[in-house]
Length: 243
Image (tube, rainbow, N blue to C red):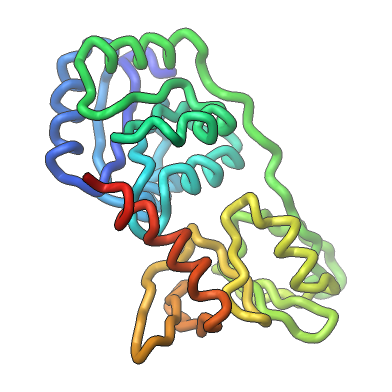
């Protein structure tokens, strides 16, 4: 926690809700700075570049849900505190499983928001969850690649090729093993030969009943069998839960 007040990031895909929360937070003298994002994907990019004490996070958002973003943030070396903000109460159990500091229901009352800020200050920073890594060989040197650096994975027989910002790495691990190992960290099997990190999905495309996703500029096919799971994870909460 900073001595000049909390640095707060507010994430909501609805501009009026975003503006209202930012306004209320600005009235709290325990808050030093407020930033806003209109999507969880945008928020993840900012959180990789800047440190925040607390993130106020909507649950239902397109592309990447608040719960999925919180799961990713749990692997940060210094994760922020999470306060979920939503119009629905039925995600509370999942939220507290992710060590959320509080869970606010919309419309948010100012006194309730102030109570959430009090809780954040009292409980301090959460204990980080150790991030899973995978060993790769580079010119005779073993390097441990953090899971968060992996954008997508291709099956190549009994091997898997990890695609990261720094290049690709071939490892002797079946894709099915990585799918099981990283499913709870936001990885989804979109094709028999492809596993993607939802945190790195930039775009979902649909044409003539077929789907694809764009990850780090690469367009990857989604099988018909996997398309329903993709739609559910990326779109269901937005289309079904909004008033």
